[in-house]
Length: 224
Image (cartoon, rainbow, N blue to C red):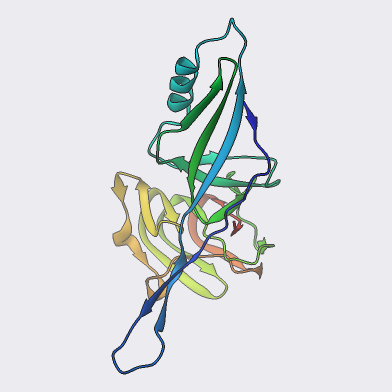
């Protein structure tokens, strides 16, 4: 399979609602403070010889390859240093030109932010993590220890009361858990019910309490 060019890269759209009010000239614009997913089609050309499987079998293999209901990394040299979070919401389409050539289009449903490669690797939390991106990062924090803990980020205290062995703070999904089936939300006392995020530039981090491991996946990101 070879990617067809030219290829149009789709960029995310802000989620904005326009409201028409009787007697008021012009719509009222309501910013919903989020970006929508993008639908990124990629067309491929397939060349087969007489000894290759039929295009029908090739089409089934492609459909099985991209099947799945969860987001997975989509990496391409079109966006060096970053990856999409994508899944395929509809079956690929195939147009057969002749017995040796066909075009397949796969449409990926992608989250609006690209993740920087390496930002999903577990790593020790530094005292002063630097976010080189324009957008805030929403890390996955992991602490092993017992008792009461305080995660202080840029002067804000995120308290965890009564940790039993370990806890995860998932800032991207706004969850606190020991594992995904064992919530620890009741232990968390966070300022304004927010979750610890890393602002652009330099940040300061400190963990207070009895712990043996403090690591994170920083999830550095930029708008696609």
